[in-house]
Amino acid sequence: MKPLLKLSGVSAGYNGDDVIRDVNLEVHAHDFLAIIGPNGGGKTTLLKVILGLLPIRTGAIEFPGLPAGLKSIGYLPQGGAFDASFPISVLDVVLSGLMGQMKLWQRVTKAQRQSALALLERTGLLPFAANPIGELSGGQKQRVFLCRALIHQPGLLILDEPNTYVDKGFEGELYRILQELNRSVAIMLVSHDVGTISSVVKTIACVNGRLHYHPSNKISSEMLTYYNCPVELIAHGTIPHRVLKNHS
Image (tube, rainbow, N blue to C red; front, side, top):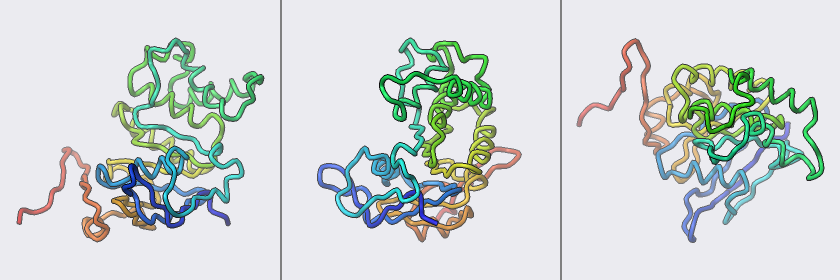
């Protein structure tokens, strides 16, 4: 089966300096891939390359299993890049995710509007459909932006720190929704919450200049050391705690 997304020997960066180097990656249907790595390691650069926002210096990027290419990708940026003061309703924000698929003269259909309402109901936001987006909390806005990323039924969903601003009460529900969505859409998830996502995703890639793919969701300190991926491992228990290395 053709991969949805394929990166071959990709290098890219800024001002002539590569941030990611010789990246090889394939994403297939029903994949749920976590992208982890330290700050400055290249996670955001990788996303920009995939989304066509940053040109590559070497290598190739292809969409063999996505006939519409970039239009088949849903994207939830970190923090939901949107002017919350803009006078637009929650429902219209969700429907704005269709703009890339519609002609200028086309109007939203009844079926599309019903799909948007169904997504809002799924994320607990249906009562706020007519409210201005600026009235919602940070976590509620993130849910709206997730609905916007899904409204055109993408083949690949990319999320950059989706739990940013999401209240803890909805965080578990968010991951449950993503697991359910993964039955019909491949997902790439950038996150620093390694301990939580390891129980949700299927595979892991560490980005720290180069990309190291791990075909499992099991994470160990040895693996992170081997991949030169200095991120923290968080252990969850009755009392919230963090496991640190022994002092030398």
